[in-house]
Image (cartoon, rainbow, N blue to C red; front, side):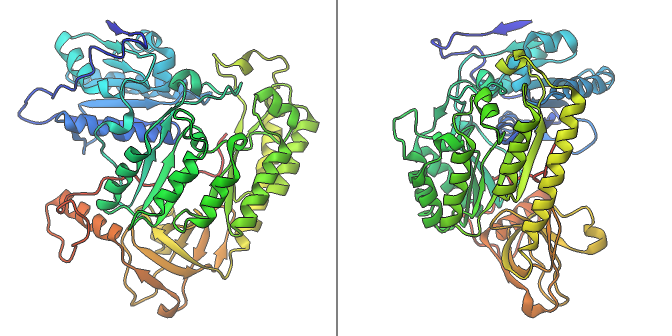
Length: 522
């Protein structure tokens, strides 16, 4: 086994260079399987880009020559999920000796040698700081006929500078920082992704411009604590300035960001949101707990009054803003009184949606060693009460959308009942999921196009718009829709008449769409 763990001072790695895959009659195929958060999705774009730059092609059949797992370490069942998947691939690899398996991401950064001990058929293990090493590690494993393990303790190359293969042409993630300077007792992310490192504003804006030039009309700014952007170069208003700069990019119609931290959420950011037309009326603001005692135990440096005050300010400046959140139930020492405080804050906050989690011990976090770990049955019962409350609030908030005219950006994904209902799907400006029908005789939109419709039905987790006539349906064909046409033509080699927008000479677009957002997860 080859192990490379240089010190942060060295800044180098024996696998930093990207080596092309050996020439073969048929190019080797790959598949990237992603577990976890938006940052993992963003890293998977880079892994795919690196592999394609090294000569690999996406797998179209059941089995790939190379399968890469990009892992999460935050959730309790993350390791079980990984090892279960690896176990299922063991006989597949045994039947296909040339196949390779690689594991990267947060769980790889944390478990390191453990992965190769539990799954010795894995060929390469790499961490969160050296995504760019993947092609070289695969080449080395194949050449040396032994597993390769390489974990760096600090960032080698900023991931956004690596080649990228994005999944969608109309919407994309843009990372503005990696890492986190906070010390929340339940979170292992800082230990796995390191201290916050910020990209320079010019680099971020250049990447956004490149996405727009390729047809994207929406971007989501991504960071572990996105609103603390600028801490590394000493500008406390850097994030609000970045939002305003996004407003100057011609052709960029929708700007979102995730996830901010309430402790660092300042009025200049709210002002920038309200005063920049293409910053969408949507905010994800993690609460975690409504109990001040639990927030203190979590080392969350704000209290419930401050949190609610932020929501009041946002809604004063942006009346139709939809606000979502994260909540943890059953943190060690949480009493019934503490939990009731969470229910009270949720009732006052009127979240459009909430991602609710049952606390689980994560080895390596301070909270794992706290006394008064709660019984599973207590946590489950509280979780069910919380989700029932939030489901009611979400349904009530969505019912307030009835009769509203909303602009929906059409996505490539449709609802589960699309074949039955013949509806398409998209996201409104406030990020609500809208299923809509196209009136008979009206033009059907493409993914990336925008339709304006009136909401006719509301449920807890989605809205429905069924126009009664063509007069109630407005379609705006967009540059993003043109880019979608080009990407589809590129995939089958067919020309697309009338697609003149974009500056990439007819090549496919390069951005990743927002993934479907679950309402909650246990």
